[in-house]
Structure formats: C-alpha cells, structure tokens
Length: 260
Image (cartoon, rainbow, N blue to C red; front, side):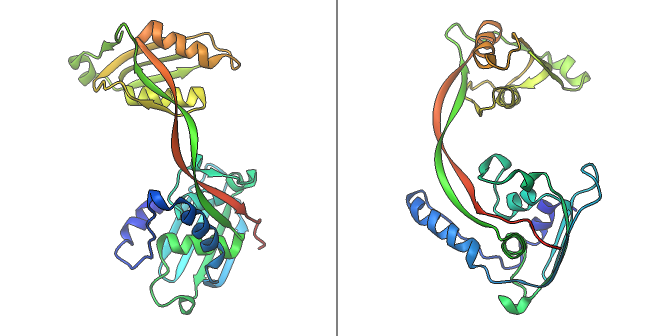
C-alpha cells in the first residue's frame, strides 16, 4: 500500500492540522520553524538502517497508530509526504536527502502526546524530527515561470481525428530537440516543455482538445530556451511569455544523517 493511500485510509483518526492564510506569511515562517523543533520525542524504539534493497526495489511506508514502518525510502520522500509538498518545493536540502535510502521500524510512544493521536503527517514529522534532527520552515517566494499562450497569428495545431484517437493509444516521444505525439493535451505539452526548459510552463491557451504534435528545434543546452520558443511560434502557433508568480517552499534549516 502506498503512503498516500495509507494516509487517506487513516484520515478518520484525529490528526492535528494547521491552516495558514495568505495574510500571515511572517507568522507562518516563524511557526513552522518552531514547530519542527518543538515536536516531543514520539518513539519508544526506532531502528534505522541504510537500505540494501536497491533503487528499483519496492518503496513503502506504512503508518499505524502505534508503529511506523519504512522500506527503501529516501528522507526526501518522507519530508515530501510529511509536509504535503512536491519535490521542487523542498529547498536547502543536502544531496543525500534524495539519494540515500533507509529501512525504518519505529514504535510510537503514545504517552508522549496522548493515545491514538500520532498518525499520518504528524507521525512522519515526529520521525524526521527525532531521528534526522530535521528543522524546517515555510516561505513564499516569487519565481519565474512561462505562460504558454496562443501567438498573434493563431494556433497551428492539427486536432486528433476522433476515429483515429479511439483506435490508437496516446503516444508521446521526447528526444533531444524533438517532441512528437498523438492525442496530446496542451496541458501535457506544457508539462513536457517545463522539463525541457527547467522552468514551470503554465497552460494559458484555453485549448481543450487533443492534438497531433510535432515540435523540432536545434538542440543546444546553452540556447535551448530561445530555440524552443522560436519553434513553438513557427511550428505550432504558440508562444512563451515570461511571468513571475508566488510559490510556497519548504526550507530545510537543519538535517542530520541518522545513526543506526
């Protein structure tokens, strides 16, 4: 069972949740920094060992009211799920946080915070605080993004034929200097462009159909951004507009490798 499914099945158990408003960013930063260090020790015993399973083996996290078991997981995965953020929202973390993998078996000390309260995110936060000495805070920062919009002369996209779309699976190929696909939603194209450009691309085209797409550009890591932008406009009738948006990040203030 995946961690996200485990958490969803346990939602009926009482879990402390703190909601933050957009008008309380400064309080948010301070409260989160204090919260990570303020969690009392939650475990009677905790066994933490580097995993020998290999990166392609199953990776699982099981959370029960009195026990937490982790197999072949990176600390970054635990941080991501404990604080409900995505990988690109975690900043300031050392490289080993997403390269080292651990097997963990921890017994919860319910007397530390009351019977039956330590499940889900709180349990993971406690583990990270206890065993990895993790201290974090949240910050809202302005980041550069691209908005994908329709160019001045209109889109130059071939809509996928319904009969063909029904009989053939969606196929998308991404190679150096080329994106080819059939039955491609523009939202998916924006995601692929994000990966190619190293910057989030937001779909603002308003196009809701699926399209047969061929996009080619001169592959060059130093000039890939302008090359892709030019190809988009000439070949698909779309363009990239730079913008700034606010985004919340989880900042790692301190973390240590655990001892067995």
